Length: 443
Image (cartoon, rainbow, N blue to C red; front, side):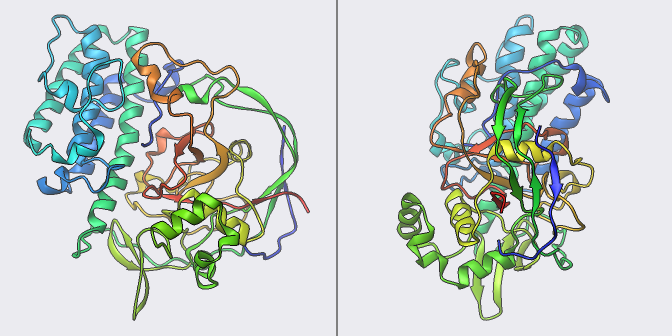
């Protein structure tokens, strides 16, 4: 199996989360708390994230890829009602028949869906009715868990639903950030300041020996079906940058004319840059006082030491070319992530909701801070099998025209992440907290 080998330090240049599928044994997920406690904790977290928003905030859809907060609140309840209560509850009746269509996302096997791009037009029901829907579903779920909580299939589906809800917690944050950024007021989502960072360690390289190894979930705890089966891959030796690319480094890329140099861009990326008249990352702006960045704390001065985020695959790939490097493969990042712990990672649990600077030596930021683009196309693993029924729709049918991202971000719940986790987005997507870790072949 490839193992890290420290190199001599030298300074050198440098729709959505839609992963739902198979559930592995539930026991590991329930090691620290009961299933009713786990259910209550995750559900309460979603409401807490929405509590800072006005009713108007919760209704508006800023673009087709984003969803209103009200829809996230309804959809995550729809999941439990549709896939669990309808199956296990005696005398089941839906809370509201129209909600079965209104809050369906991609499940053609379940029935009709409200058009995704028109979710912001759902001014009715009011937010209060959606909260009533959540409360009703939660009460019925807790009664069901009290009566049949030992049922293994019920446990699997509940844990799947809770991981699905955690994905929507992250989407709620990234979607509301995009919405608030469009307001001339540039309002803050919360009042936690983005503090200035200390000097980031100089870029170096950490070498990994090649060889035959295994990637994918080991099946000892929850995973989505796209993380299965665990299988063998052969890796050539490679090197990774120990940290993410910073704002300051990406600013050098901009100031050296990279957005005007077609030699750095994939053909489709160059067309995308020109069609959208792009010259910098999403949420960056420039005025007489210098570069600014919109954050969930409002507009802040761009900190050159913090990781550069909200970058598309096209931008990440172009930067890597400019830096004389490349993007890592998802197998390389999974091998690298097998060693570090997540204890000090900057996840959503910190309440910061913004990337933090890298500190110390060794491989850092492999978890949290920013999703890391890989050059791996999102495709099935050898031997992949979709889950049976409507739930099986949620991964396999999206395995085309997308790239894999790894590691989680500052908006990801900590207990939702693992080394084998595969996120995926189209090459032009950049409203997620997506960043860059450089890789290269040995020299």
